[in-house]
Image (cartoon, rainbow, N blue to C red; front, side, top):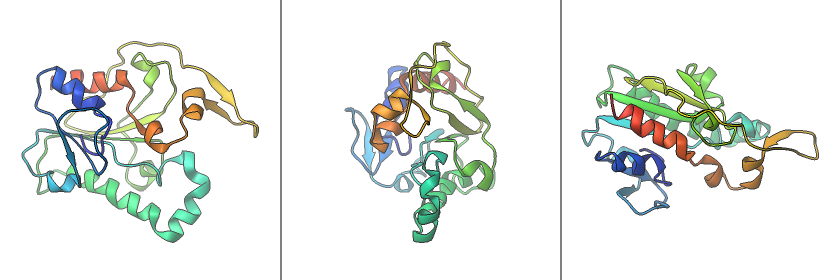
Length: 195
């Protein structure tokens, strides 16, 4: 799992008996196999599946009001370049042949800069009462099948009149907001490791 410090997907794969490791420049939140460093250091170690969660801080539409400043100072281009490292791995002519790749990101600029996602999912399709529109770009993997449809969770209205999911409003840090919901992590592990 590239750019995963939570260990959510890694731990679900390990529970199913698979060899899995998470990788991030941050330490892991949960004990388990984790490479703290640049994922490109271990990308050619013979993996048969890569699930990448590139940082969305400079790419997601939720931060669109900051895009102009981020374009000017280069942060957005850095985010695009890093995302595209994973996108280029999906090219059949890539030097590193990982047969199964998923790239996860919220709705953002990559849908227009690169291509539309293969699938858009929500946590409430996988047993977690929350709304978080999540895009998946897939190579060699099928779209995820919903496992348990539940309610969409609570919403709040901000003073400016914007409607936000309560879980999102309650979690102010980008690290907390970027974590994979448990139901999605379980579905990724169960459905994609069976391919």
